[in-house]
Length: 313
Image (cartoon, rainbow, N blue to C red; front, side, top):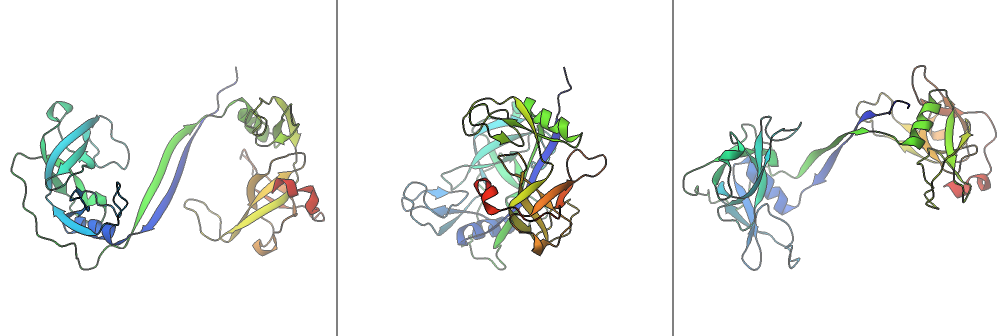
């Protein structure tokens, strides 16, 4: 049996969003060690605050300060913290209904073990030493045996309010291709591009997925395509990606390899970015020791007629 292919993959991007008045006040309040909720038309206080009532959809803007102490409503023990989580030692995920609130806030509870955590236990906020106006300004919760803490009387108006946040979204996983993609990857090590033909519609798909996306039937017949192809459509990239050593601007394109019925995507090089066009004929450029083409470059052939690739747009 051949070795099973697998590779660690990371999908990561910074998510930037602007804040409306409610979220701005909430995050700015955390920076100032103040917790704000919002009051609904029926008198409930929601923490974290939202801009619209989840029941009536009414717009909400009546900010209310709640205490930094509260009660655990439910919990789960995290015995193996992951990168980026609030604590690097085992802790409990808890839902805490802060004193003065009618809903619960999700955060971490610093506790020595699961036998010390219970529903109904009293807790308080442990503030981060350095606060910037983010949910991480609450470092975690900690056990608290005292009475509800007093509030500051804040109205939600602060100097230098936080108006936007950047949240890093990241997914780490191990990818294992199936039979069809493994054959495709093995062929690339020989600088060949192999797809699979659908036994029903006879279309050739590259890269193959083991089944026809149109007919829904399994595919097994391998077909070598390319290596040359045609640019069907493209975009000009003007933002430099993290850990990608390519100068901007550059072109990323959909390329219909000769003999394929599905366009794959790849970078276009060897030509100024503003000269790339639909119908451009291209060929792969390989880098020694790399499994896949580094980029595609013009072949010097006349551009392909639109009718030869219009169905692949």
